[in-house]
Image (cartoon, rainbow, N blue to C red; front, side, top):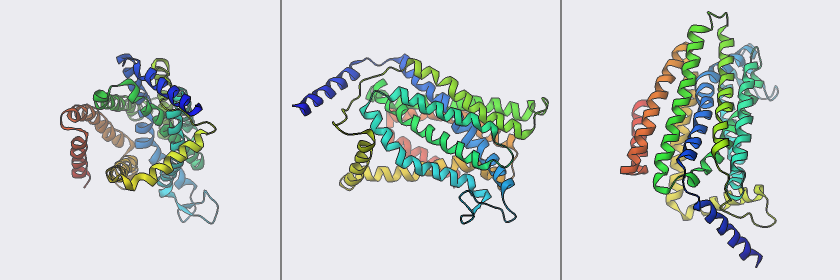
Length: 348
């Protein structure tokens, strides 16, 4: 009887959640979280942190070019420290995010936790202002906190999409969110370009200090614009009911284990996940390492790197809108394949 009551309660809650009409105002508020957090992915991950943290690590390295963040028995080449830090943050997300997925499914805490992780990430990003001298370990720690928080907040952000858009509108709504994110990230990057290239020297600010201010500005941007979705997104009943006596931790890992066990029975789902892992991680690697490669291997100046990424940001803004509309007419699969063909043509 208790199980039946729980089932009926969960169904009732789901009905209430889906009965609320979709709101354009709420969709726009949802877009603004992409606008807010894209400052981190653009200004911090893509442009400034890789070259700057590598420079800090090189200054702390011994005569052979190695640092020892885990003790003298594990040497790490200074030029590779940022790459290892990125890999570690991704590996930690593999264990961390399934738990948050369960919380998103089984609780009413989506908005609250999205805000919590957003502000943890934003605070860690603003803390990057204090990176100077040989503080590469502090830089690695702040990046781990910020990137984990970024990924965690995105879990709850994405969980809102089925609640704010009808199935036929989700491609359009999602692509518009992506587009606004590219635009927001591009605008802050343009401001930082103006600051680093034209204003910093005139104001007596060194290039290193200008970079630290630019890093901190991404955290400030993230914090300010997160207020919009937190004010306008509605709190809804969970679509699933947490089993009696279970915790979010146990449920999250149970769901993950169940999914992995069942994957061989669903070859199309397995193929999709493997394909997504390969192409998405490939794209993210190119994006994350592009400016580090440009700075260390091609010896491009910071201002030149910013200009290149800025150009990409505004092209991506229109591309996200275009592929959103394209997916409505030819389907998401064909739109993704076309975008990957273009990606391969450019990178290879």
